[in-house]
Length: 185
Image (cartoon, rainbow, N blue to C red; front, top):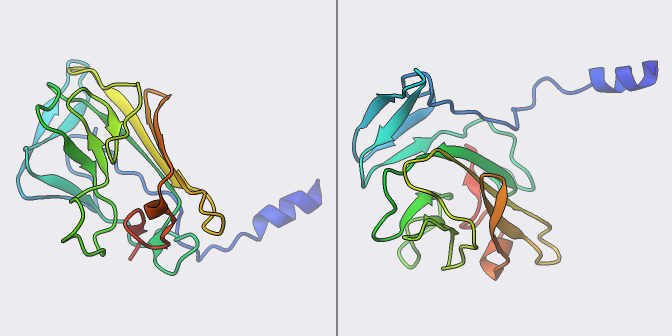
């Protein structure tokens, strides 16, 4: 038992963290998060919690500096994003919920990766699965991306309230530090 405790005690302290949390429930924008292209309003819920309301056409930029990258020098290729969102109504036209790599040239590709579709599905490339967002209700959305580069088996998966929504295996996922990676610097 003493040997295991010593192994744990030797973790390097100078490594950047591998988790970053942005909590929007405290009535203000969290540190290292900012709105681009619009403004935000703070909404106080009936249970006294708060949320950030983002204007249509604007987005929140999350600063991931000092996150420990994986399989790269400064990009996060394997990740899990967890967010709680509420839409007043489903969109008439799909919109991008997540845009990942701001360092990639986007002139020939879409402005984002993870999309909310008019029927409430979440995915990309038109693949959205059977689980759907319901308007007016808080929904937990999780996006994971991972797998090995060597065997071209990388997978992006979306979940709605813990149930698998879409699972996508496309060649574009297998590009290290590409469109489906996040900058950590």
